[in-house]
Image 1 (cartoon, rainbow, N blue to C red):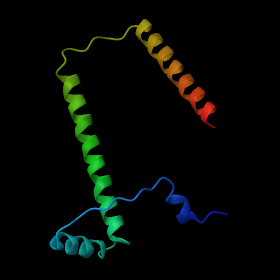
Image 2 (tube, helix red, strand yellow):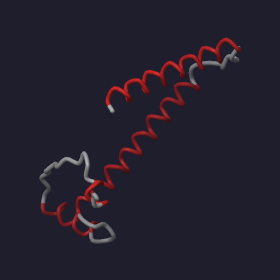
Image 3 (cartoon, rainbow, N blue to C red):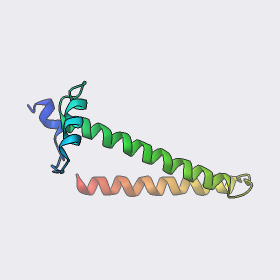
Length: 101
């Protein structure tokens, strides 16, 4: 049986970064305030930045939609086309997953 912690490391790679001593001390101090290690602290910062970036991207898309002009009502044909597109996309993904597994 695999150790749960070992399972978490699947797909993990290593990256070395160079920091000035002052930043290294800062990272070590922050890591000691509730993180298991400096790596966990850095991973948390990166995940938070990913979330921020995704939020900014979503806001930009929403603004683009708002500024694109007045909305047009959907017709039954529009809904049918959307359903067909979703089914086709799902079938492709399912087929791709079956060939991998």
